[in-house]
Amino acid sequence: MRKTKGRLKTKMVKIEKEKNLQVTFCKRKNGLFKKANELCTLCNARVAIILFSPSGKVFSFGHTKVETIIDRFGKTDHPDSNIQSNMQLGEIHQNSTIRGLNNRLTEVIFLYYYSEILLCLRKL
Image 1: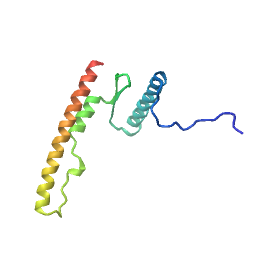
Image 2: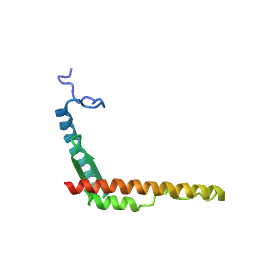
Image 3: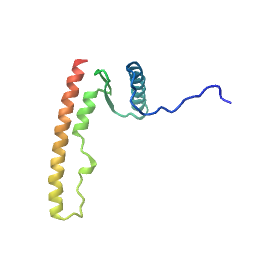
Image 4: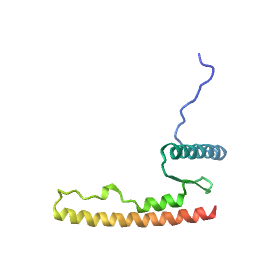
């Protein structure tokens, strides 16, 4: 018979107590950054994490640097942008127009968030 309950599963609901919320955030942030560091070390991966705490503080982890990884992400071609060879010309034109608009929208959204992230990082 067990003397303790052991490690219980945590319910995924918002923590109401401010003190408990801050403690949980800090512990999970540290755990997340530790796992990201392990991923970088073991797999030679490039990882960037940007966290906004409940109190509004910004935390970042980047291997090598967050800005470098974000720049690289913005310049990467995504595999979904390839056109299938068996499409009709009309479909290709329509899809390329939609794809172009989607790419432009993604770029604008990326630039917006990138500028916001840089502003936050400069405040650190």
